[in-house]
Length: 55
Image 1 (cartoon, one colour):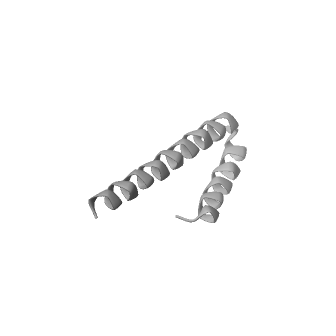
Image 2 (cartoon, rainbow, N blue to C red; image 1 turned 135 degrees about the vertical axis):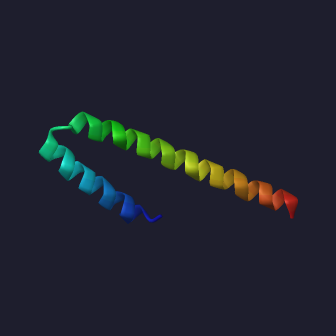
């Protein structure tokens, strides 16, 4: 998924959180999404290295 799409999701969630007053939830969700993105990219790198070893 592209970076601009993550930005769009973050903007939508930020707008909703401002109207509902859940700013702390927005910040914590942001931390969780960043962590999941880092885990995903690490797993993709591991998969790439493993495929290169097999070939």
